[in-house]
Image: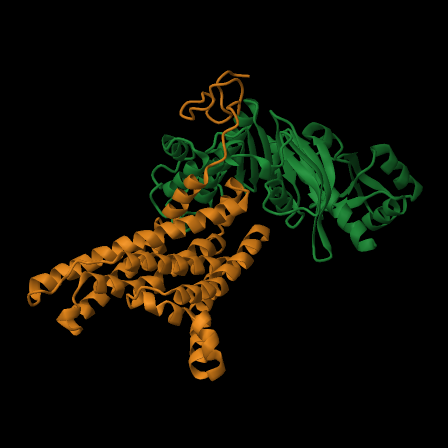
Length: 297
Length: 276
């Protein structure tokens, strides 16, 4: 189980991670979502002891990562697939880590086969595509037979087949009792595999809950003949408004409340229903609403 | 929950550790020993193309020096010990670069992330890198001996009678070991202090050279140089002299200034550095 409590990181005067807390239970896949620069990677680095937080703490089964005796045996970490020595072969990269972990050498070949890199194992990592590096990174994370996986953008560079493979792998890992924390800005990918979602923007958690529950709260989709007037009315009523990619307004409020506001300001509606755009709309409405607040201040 | 299942394989096969109950039920595995980490660091020195080329260059430089000695130096000086001493300088110059790369490579190739994720107590990695450096320095003496032996056999085969004595004094061997260990440690120290390959290599070569030049030019720096300039304090070792107490003290102060201080700064930097 991963417990993150009030993690905070500042660079200069800027708070890039602001009191972030969440929990990942065994048997679940938690999607850690946010736009680029939201603080996801910094949070994951703090979780893995690579960056010192200014405040807060993170534990894996109650133990801070740096206090784990042989962390690779308990937590599989992939924070950046490109952070491997370009001059080493894929096999050598895994062998070095296998030596630190104290796992059998045969395990290296097993994992190369699992991620489909057996044929490329003796080529240098510098010649690998990003997708192959991701596969190598995933093999590296799984090498110590951990029960927790922490993966930062693991789907980057994978082709559709690779993404499907990864999704299946993570689902099976969780179904066998493993804990998965996976970050992404690829919403569709996370939506397909995650049980729980933690959405972060500008260093703060903006949503945290079960996938179904969060999707149910995706808000209201509304169109009007005069969208400017409707937007002004909704904002005057204190409701957070965002614009979806097709021009409809997304409002984080109940349907009848939006209808009331529209009626009160005499706007003709052409559409009013619960948003069904899935995670992408949720994501958009939350992050842009927050951006709006930020720019209003 | 499936018995004997690892989250990955579902069978625990091949992991040898998943024979407990659920996923990750293997007993908390122990901390990797410093000896194991040292073996890994040693392997990392030679398993990349740059490392392999550097080692090849070192052997080649030793061979060139030996050939020059065979051709240009009086046959009376064709003895194993002098050939051995002749290899110390090229090794002493190039081997520290391997030490620098052992540290800065982790940053330039960004492997520090994986390294410190597996070994979060970073000073253990530092100790392992230093131990690997010491091991390489000692192994280099074997390479020196090998090149010297080949050169000496050549001298015996081609030279006048009486050429090619095999004596190697223990004191020479001992001080040669100290010299190479100090050199490699200085490379590692500069690497950790600067965490940048070109910067560390330039600083490693330029700073002592500038200091040597100044010590030779400026009269009042000369006394200081005798205690703080490796070119001077290592000279007796390369010449095969048995070091006096004062010469050891001079080597010691030079080592403190150029190795111990940068090492202390470097360890602090590595332990605190943000890894991204």
